[in-house]
Image (cartoon, rainbow over all chains, first blue to last red; front, side):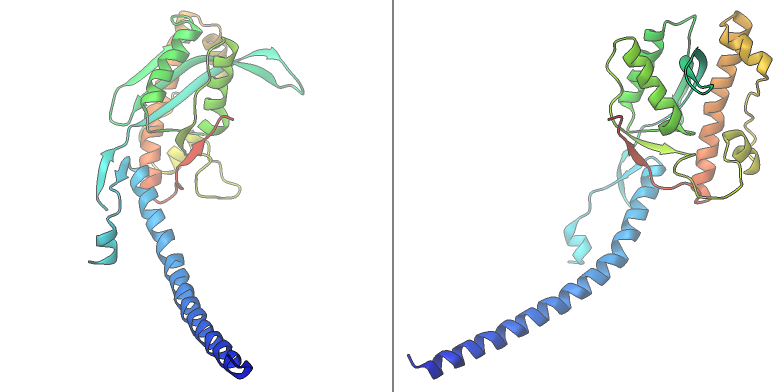
Length: 67
Length: 185
């Protein structure tokens, strides 16, 4: 295995890693934005129900995902 | 939002009398009455004199343990810690942690505005009156004489009735924040 080949392999791996990281980060930031919007609303609705003496039903993950 | 379980919410109030001088004009307290009732249910009242301290506290504990949440005006700052002090004094185990909805501590924040139960109830136009007691009435009540006991009973039960109405109104107006866990340790 030549030195040149090793450099190419490394460059390819670096490129793929950067793309993977960038895509994950983009989705992670979008998920945080959505969670920051959703969770306080969900918590407020839950607390409002509890204050009125009602314990909300457990969340159904399929319903939450809309499937 | 769907729900699966109707929570048992216990509304409570206690009356106490000063018992011994302490520091800086403060006194130690002794419970003279406890009134408590589940929302939508009958209000029970224990009075020191007709009931022993142990009967009062253990009678209340049964309701407390059966409740999913307890509510009252300043219960985290006053009623619950006083009850625990009284339980410890007679050698019984204290109350455990409980979800609480305190209409004084969890309320909307304001400035230069009285949030006494009597004042806020009147401000919000509630028809349930607090059974007002003069200093002379309190002296009678705290001596545990028959007329005083009647006054204490009316006061404690009246406070719980008024508080039930107050809390419902505060929830409707968005003046009450989320319930919080009370942890005595």
